[in-house]
Length: 489
Ligand code: BG6
Image (cartoon, rainbow, N blue to C red; front, side, top):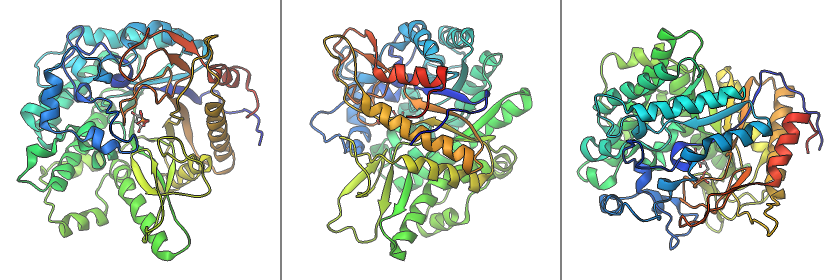
């Protein structure tokens, strides 16, 4: 496997992060508490059981509120990017990236979500951040909401279930877009908009025990509808007010294969994929797919909508399709005797052709090419890989080096497939961002030891460490790839 490294000069090679996983400074400069500040690493729970960690109840939220001092709530300290951003960006710029994906912490701008006026210090922080990126010629790619809504909206409004939250989000997003308008072209309203189905609290602030008398699936789909409306409003706002802005849909692109050629398994995998595609379908095509409406009917799910919703969705479709890709799984009708594997937060049947990580995620480079082809054929719009990477336990040696050859291998194999797809499959791709930049807190398990970065951060699962940064071998590998167009691998 080897391939010349040649793509158009406009192609965005980058890295990706999210506010709650890197920033820290959870209660500084006026920031309010977010849902992410209530999540902690639970060593007693198997790391493959992310649902147990993140599907928290009111009691756990209260515990978090009453415990402002403890370092257990890992996303409160992140890797302190809030104070290290200049140093980090300088090192990433030296690596040669042309794009940096990050998210805006909603409670840093509107601490309670329902505030009348934004927190000026929060706005200034992000303005300084994008100016710093531009200083090095790096394109900011901005996610407006990445798993960290203000906690107050959960406690006093029932989060995304409440239509009023759409208005609060609109106030937040339009404030940010106006403030950063001279620097930001690419916007993503929601990280992995489909994730509400799999982790309703961590994704959208839905706490099961607050809805005991309701059909919780209906609560999830109602909230999903509100997010679609909110995202369409971002598209509308950007298109009407600014000429050069581009707004993307973003999904978790897991790839589900049939376990074998048994048509029942083929059908099952198709149905599972449809559930994810429904989200991008709605944002790209502007209407709900028939099968989803049928599902609502069958499951007695009655969504409340306003009369302008249909037109809003139809008139304000996404400009590009962004996606994260880490892994694939298989689907089988008869699962007896078959072991389980994970692909991000989706679970399925183990694929014997693929290795898997300690967290049960199977490594499947060809799956990224399959994903590109599927999405390109389905939508015929530009695509953007905004997350791809390997979570692994790295060791800092006595010489302060990190020999993460496994990460280099993972990235080389995936990038090879991406370049091949661009060359041979007619895929229109805006860019490729690795997850992450420096190490950061894991979204699903809240661990620090599940590391993704090119730059190691000295910190453990319980917040102990110096926060010092060390370049890994993969840093030099990506640098050489971007700067000197070295062959892959
Ligand atoms: C993506 C999320 O699904 O996966 C990120 O958008 C997350 O926030 C990434 O960090 C990797 O998942 P995890 O759980 O290993 O951090």
